Amino acid sequence: MGEALSIGLQSPLHGHGVATAAAAALLAAAESVRELSLRHPPDRVSACLSLHAEQMASSPLARDQLLCRALEAAGLDIAAGCEPLAQWPLFFSRRTTPTEAARAGVREWVFAQAGDGLGEGWDVARAVEARLVQERGDAFEAARDQDERLGFEAWLQMALWDDPRIAATAEIRRLMRAGGVRLSERLRGERPMSGAEHALRLLSRLLGPKTASRDRGEASS
Image (cartoon, rainbow, N blue to C red; front, side):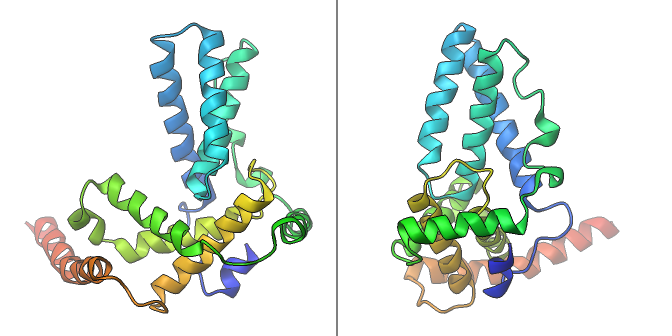
């Protein structure tokens, strides 16, 4: 995670690192297992999970890479006749954190195979922003803590692109890194924002204090 710090990204507060994002991926994978199990026999469920995992492996979004691994693990468990995701405590846990030497080996491989360019980085950054808005349901909700959430996503991109535990190819890892760098630049204001982005940033600044004031009022009542 050294590069994340070198480009000015702060590590998340306690309880909000890779393990938290991994937990969200496990929950999503468990829901997929539940839904598929209602309609298909175990062998078909395993095949569907594996196919979905392959699709996620081609995404440059860090959260999709975590979901890829969770789906893959669930599919393998079912194929082996085991309870799906029974080993969840070890899924991207601190105990399985790769060494710096292992990360360095991944970085060397990526740079040799795909280079270190930042091409398409803005496309990845926009995809991350669009995902956040989609998850919140509308731009007004997304604006409330936009910078904080984007900051975490930028950190997550940089924390995982050289992590040997994900299944991404060298090119996908390059794109993950490029997206993380561009998101950090976006947060530092190093790229002119579009009209929609400027409006979202303005909403974030306007709604933040009001939300905090309202919360304090509710707490004191």
